[in-house]
Amino acid sequence: MITTVAAVISAATIAVAAAICRSCVIGIENGCCGYSLANPKFWMYSGYNDNPPSSTVNTQTTDICSFSQTAGAARGAVGVLTYDLLKLESSTDELNNYNSNELIAVMFSVPFDYNFYDNWLAVGIFDHNQPCDSALFDLMYNGIDLKFRRAKAKDGSVVYQGKSVNITATMSNKCVAVVKVKLNDEC
Image (tube, rainbow, N blue to C red; front, side):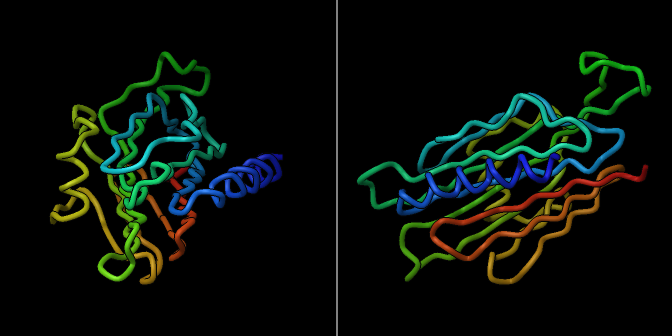
């Protein structure tokens, strides 16, 4: 059922995003058994959020959100999205009994001008105190750090192996880019 709902939402989101010249649709599949995602934050270098991320992405569920260029602007959809990574303490815990000391980050860049820029994607896991801001975006777009992995969309998947959660992500090399992020743990 999750796949069917996600496919319908994804198709609708992509159809809306296609009406915009540059956009990025992000699908996050939480394949973890012991971790949920909560408290999303995003920072945009250019563009805006037109389909907000869900407040939580529980275990074994999927969420879709999207970001688009500002209408009439010769700029792309470029930014970073973070979620707190919440560890379930026991199988009967409610969301408010989760413990968070890390967050996941997804950096995306769908530029306006493909003569000078490419689609870029980065994923990683940071300390939960890491702000979702221009410094995080700049680190993930330009920097080098063991906390994330980055690649051009045309180069294939990006894999980041954390201590407890692994992240695999792909990005289409189109002006309406689709990013697929999958989290897995050892369960």
